[in-house]
Length: 121
Image 1 (tube, rainbow, N blue to C red):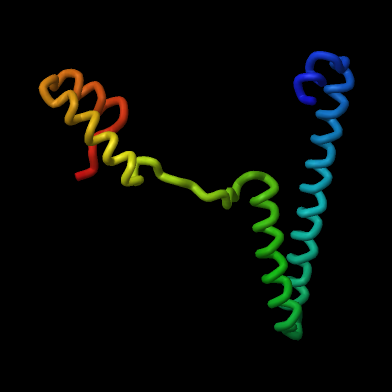
Image 2 (image 1 turned 180 degrees about the vertical axis):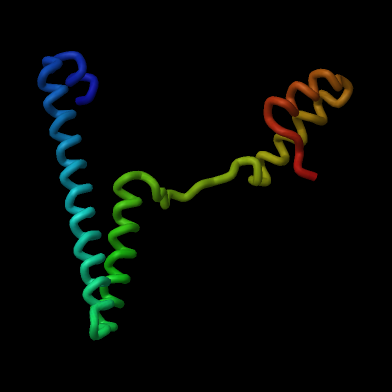
């Protein structure tokens, strides 16, 4: 569908869709920021003349959740699993085999090490 849209939809329709998506993202950010403001209000209420521990604690909890949500929405918090390939046993074995194969050619071996990294011994 994406290819069809690029080839057959007028530019104005594609731009309108992009504006709509941007507006939705801005609206979501605005709503999260409103929640943050309200949570901060609970914290301030809890710190009033007569300390309201329940309101203060609730405000802190909600603020933490809101900040976490904001970080996810803005992409500052990425919870996707990350794999470090250089630490995988299969990669270590392949790298060792490649370097051993060019053991008689130190200039080539040096270029390979520069390109893929030195073995972590």
